[in-house]
Image (cartoon, rainbow, N blue to C red; front, side, top):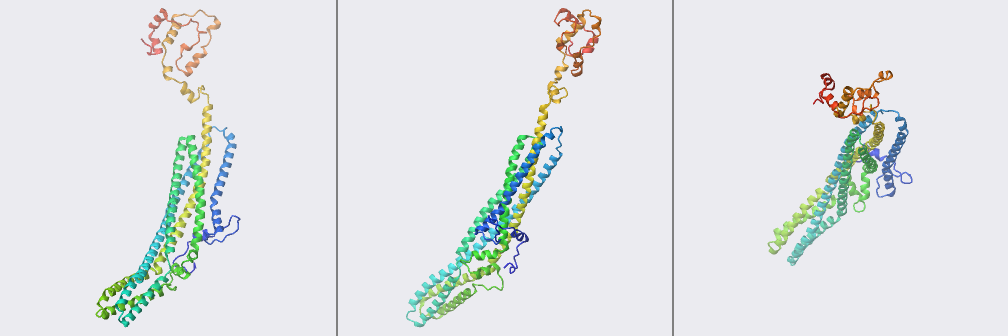
Length: 534
């Protein structure tokens, strides 16, 4: 059959998919001929769909092994204060590029599959319309001959009752009408085929709409994941990474599920595309003969038209009746004027039936229905199957890239956690800690000299003379607090200086201290500045 087909050749990818192993649940080989009604063939397609489940299991095992390795290597990485994030960044970038590329492939495959299915449904609706017109023409012709023509002949039989030769001519016309009725009734009943085509077209369009929408949402989800991953790496937020992780897992499951479903569907369609004629002949053998099915499926000049004989008999019978009516109008009307009305009615019915018969001859020719059949095959086996292959490639690339993205997210999680732990371990009182220095440093406090401090310092250094000290204490170096204050604060804070070792009583607002402060020399003003000048 496939060799006899000149105008349709199954594409190479259908043969490649057709040779996929077909086994049932018991792992026994199954014939790859398209038989969707058989249980073994259904089991083989279900096992092919389980490829997605196997891939998902392998991905989860690889992710689990990566997590175990990540946890085992965590202790070794704690010794490194600055972990290298270049590898993680590059893996994330490459993963994002792969996902974006796979999304582009997915958009193309989704569009190609939709175009192929649309061409299939359009061809089915067109063939269904052709069969509907054929059915209406046959029914109209039968109604004209069986009802209208017989009524006129019965009235003419009453009018020509007195003339035996006229009645003989009417009997001959009745015989011609019976021939037309018999041949039109012998045409196959196409109501069953018309109903099947309409149901197939409607169901296919319904399923295709939701399939196209599902893949579109999955493609958009992958793009959103890429954008969210870039934002998560920029923000370095653990909450955002948790949300991204949930969406990545969801997309990973959907990608593997779409890969399994696409594989089973592509293999089933390829099994049909390799031998489509055999399946259609087997499905239509109950109401259409094999000769009729082969005539429309192949439409070869060597195949005779199965309706040609019936159409020829109808055409000759109608032509004979037209000649008889012309003779009746010419010779019988002058004798029986009342017969003119019925004879003209018969002539109109014959003209209408002959016109319908010409249309029926054109529609029953194989070229119209065969073209619709070829368009449907090309839509399914070329655009549809090719689009499914691209969708399978998208699902595979997206699933692998999403698995790598999960590994990147886990790695980023550990890096962010280790960074936060290092910041929490730093002592805030450490003067070399940038955060602690920001917390303890107050520029207004360090640069503003308190009134009490200067009073106490002036009172203790100018007005109040320290008691005489022994020689052992005269060479004592400056106190330690002075060195520290000059080192870290700039100007010493005398209100915080302990009284031990100062050699002066506690500061107080005495008249002598006030006098000393007012009588500050210019050298002292230049030394302390004009911040506290009255």
